[in-house]
Length: 299
Ligand SMILES: Cc1cc2nc3c(=O)[nH]c(=O)nc-3n(C[C@H](O)[C@H](O)[C@H](O)COP(=O)(O)OP(=O)(O)OC[C@H]3O[C@@H](n4cnc5c(N)ncnc54)[C@H](O)[C@@H]3O)c2cc1C
Image (cartoon, rainbow, N blue to C red):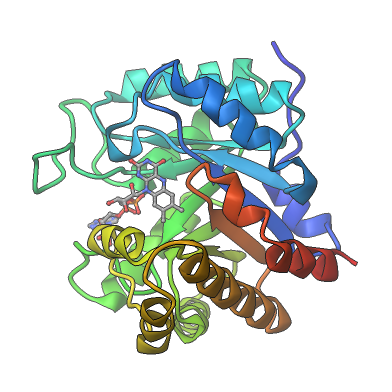
């Protein structure tokens, strides 16, 4: 059994500066680990408060999630939050995976339902599996009582939700089942986050809501992201990126500048930290404007 990590819940309660978390995804095979390792090495200077590793997202191999957790730990990054989804698993398999996470010393899990597998349009629970993230939270709460559990929230609504109010009611159920904080889907317009937080609070949700940001580095990347999420993309940002060529270093600089402005406003107005969907990309993080921004908020 490995020495256990600190929990994100403790960090949220005790850390004086806003938290920064970085999200990694496993490469498709072991060959990709060399590239990922050098990318992680280049992220050292940014000193995240915790890091997260996705599970099976976009068809990536699920067994590699734990390998990326081990790599991050070997390279001195932590605490680590491993994601877990219900896709393709029975309840008994999820219990076994939960035990593996504990044996690895992981004390933070992002509990998710997951997306339908590629080619499928609707999510179908596995026979003897779970239908919603709330059920996974309940299961994990029972078998991992000391683990800090996060769940996903959708400021612009989950694509399958019948209404924004129903979506927030479902989010509240996940939290009532024992999740301790929320990380949001990507958004590019801060007002969307502030309105979401206000609606959550009005619905009785009291837990921290960590905003999730993805620095837009090219218009083709943004288009792919908009297809996957329901995020709206501000016209002013689109115009500025188009004027900067849509892709390449100038467009990337526009994206970083936008993200820095988002971070400054979110933190100035009380967000508990920032979760960056960095897509394993060190270059964006090394932008001096973003590094300066973190230094300011850490000071
Ligand atoms: C921060 C974050 C991290 C992510 N990481 C991953 C990852 O690692 N791997 C991956 O595959 N995907 C990941 N995703 C994507 C996520 O799996 C999808 O968005 C998925 O479609 C929904 O997952 P969920 O956990 O939000 O599901 P749920 O909370 O179960 O919600 C799914 C839908 O069901 C509805 N619903 C929820 N509970 C109920 C209920 N009791 N009755 C009726 N309807 C209900 C909700 O309103 C929503 O429309 C992530 C998303 C976010 C925001």
